[in-house]
Length: 137
Image (cartoon, rainbow, N blue to C red; front, side):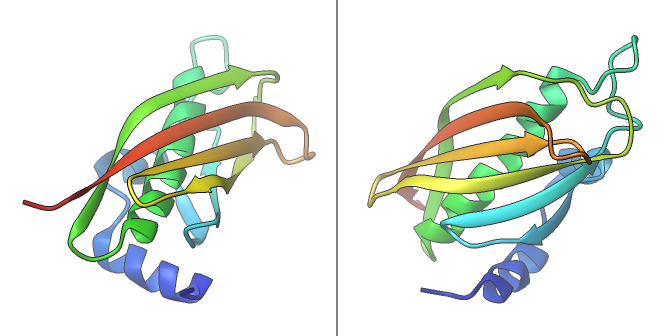
């Protein structure tokens, strides 16, 4: 199994994408089974000053999709086919941290759970993403 630093090297070559860059997502660890990233609250809020629910989903999908694509390997592509999120808290400042854990790493499907916490360690959102793995055409 490739190391987490190999995952970061792979991600640096590939990039996280324009949306993740715009939202300030910073990838700290990447492997198929465990990944970590942070995102600032500032600039990603709703009008009332809470981190936007969609921002939690973007962080979760970024982590889950990158982990799934790393698992898929060369010549394959992982595409999100289902995502859901349950928001249980609201960050208002600082950074949030997403920790992505594989639930299933199969040949054609992956499932990852991403727990997003605020700086005090309080869970704010739980995201689950399923990715379909298919050969590149």
